[in-house]
Amino acid sequence: MTLSYDDLRALDARHVWHPFTQAGTARPAILALGARGATIFAADGREYLDMVSSWWVNLHGHAHPAIVQAVADQTGRLEQVIFADFTHEPAARLAHRVCKRLPGDLNRVFYSDDGSTAVEVALKLAHQYWRNQGQHRSTYIAFEGGYHGDTAGAMSAGHSSGYFSAWKDMLFPVQTVPFPETWDGDTGVEDKEQAALDAIDMVFATNPDRVSAVIIEPLIQGASGMRMCRPEFLRMLEAKVRDAGSLLILDEVMTGFGRTGDIFACAKAGITPDLICLSKGLTGGFLPLSMTVARDGIFEAFLGQDLSRAFLHGHSYTANPIGCAAGLASLDLLEGPACQERIKAIEAIHRSRLDGLKSLPNVAHARLTGTVAALDVIGGGKGYEAGIGPKMKAAFLERGLLLRPLGNVLYLLPPYCITDAELGRAWDAVDEVLRQLVK
Ligand SMILES: *Cc1c(COP(=O)(O)O)cnc(C)c1O
Image (cartoon, rainbow, N blue to C red; front, side, top):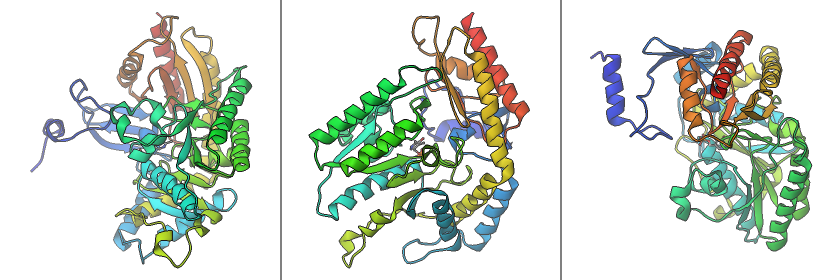
């Protein structure tokens, strides 16, 4: 039976529940037929330049032939195997490759399926790490605006992001401290950093030997609006956590795999966490897969003769071989000179175009880290205009661009394959839409 595009859209409208969507008011979903490079082809004949890397997962463009081939080969060889008692080549090799690129003795990979589960694993590992040493530590410190995923533990750590009020009474308490967000030309950054550090001191002082871990999105808070902090702050934070004898968890689900200009934000900042969560770019955007990487000392605290000391946690598809094979192919591309060149070129274009927009009266807090550029859009000179995000999204879709502002924050987070011309076209549209809004 062949179905027309209209039939397919009707089936979707009847049976599919879309994420982060109010179906009562949403426009019908765009039917994607295919995608190549940075472009998505829709059933209505339109093309969209994917300026959000399909929710921050895609690194090398859609349907990159090297990853397509790796996935096809692995599918025919071993598509899935139980990961207790068994292992396989792609899992062992990918773990080795990632650990080689991580700082310090982050040597032990626990695989799971997505960013949220990678964070759940980190929170649970920290908890049991202390328990295995006879300590009960149930206090966690997170940063205002931090977003760590949509499962219960991740929601608890990210409760201040504002997305979770419907589930408030499901969550465990987490202490939040200010995030010292900064931008180009910010003169108050050091005061903000000191305030954050003081707040952390306060939590440590009032909860002696109770703080299990501090969790942070390093350099860029993604979902709360591409809010950026300085590497200097992360170094001071690391020192503070070490002084207090607690653990540091980095949620690099979004910042990992080149987004910040370096392969990992921790490498860029020169810090070594105890646990790091990786997901979105891990497979180059092909398959859901994630990892929580632990330092040697964390892993060793789970060793013994007793099963109850072990980490009794796992998922049906843990370390899926096809996902791991995609991850290996993606890393080959990422580490190659062509991709590294593109990452630098993207940052340079972002820099010059962002600087060009700063004089607009409705642009504030321009900021840039690696391949992520962001700015706040201010409405009519009197505070933030409600509803500006959806308005801008529609204006960009009209112009063939997939750009999804976070509230009044406009950001560009392109796949690394994007050409200078494509990126220039996106910035031209941003320029045009911002100027139109001023009128
Ligand atoms: C997206 C995201 C998550 C959640 O990942 P999912 O794959 O959507 O579950 C967690 N942390 C950060 C920083 C993210 O950006």
